[in-house]
Image 1 (cartoon, rainbow, N blue to C red):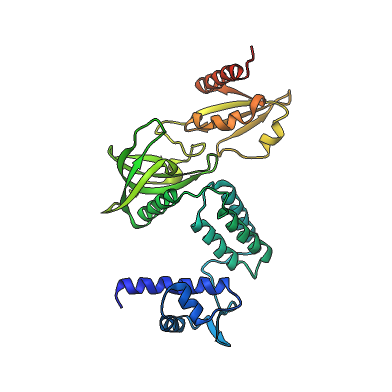
Image 2 (tube, rainbow, N blue to C red):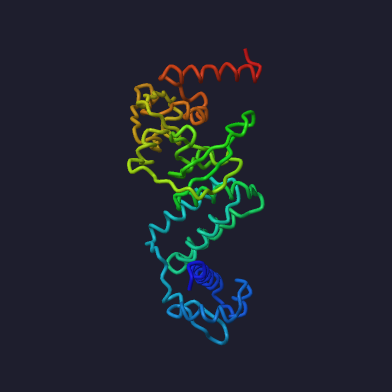
Length: 326
């Protein structure tokens, strides 16, 4: 059997497993053949390869859930973590993503016996990711899948990128070293080597207009560590400079909420005698914090650094004009 035929067979065996897991009532060999677009004789041969956990009864094929083993197992508390992660994923994605939905369904099936309620909610999260109200963006999905293949197979990719609607589309060769989500902006980023200028750069995937996988291979440098790269970042922005100390003063009405969450790994929180709170952290690029700081409104004052404080002062001036205030 050549490599291509073997790959097709492996994929088909996985598809048979998934179909049977989704149909506890069982399926006939004819139904399986029709769903997978192959001859019934092919299904008959394939079922022999998975006979350890698939059986036939009354003309229908079933998966033996007692014998079937998933590759990852969870205890109940781990299952809850999966549920929470799924809910965050559902809330963060603004586009339909059938791959994410399929992953959640598979997790739901894996947890069906252990935690049926969590399993059901994982299925609902999958449905939410595929709902019609969510943005249908086939081009984005294709680009994300292309970058995933680039990362997995260590193959360079050609991308066409525009930083904003006013910028022209530029063409680069890119080596995908890492893919990172940005929860705050509901975005996904690719970090890797851009050519030109042969430097590590970060691209917001939503701003990539087009992507083509190339045959040219690349190697990820041994010293590339995304955790170290983003160590001081507020989200996704990083620099080669030392991090900057950010000092914020939160008013009494916000101190409880601020103290309930650890917002950054380097933060230090010091309550003040007047009920306010001083918040300090070392941040790679303080400008990335602006949307978060704005969200606190008048309950926060930027103390340092001066350029961040000035940026907020300028925004306050602009807001007074927007709302026609003296």
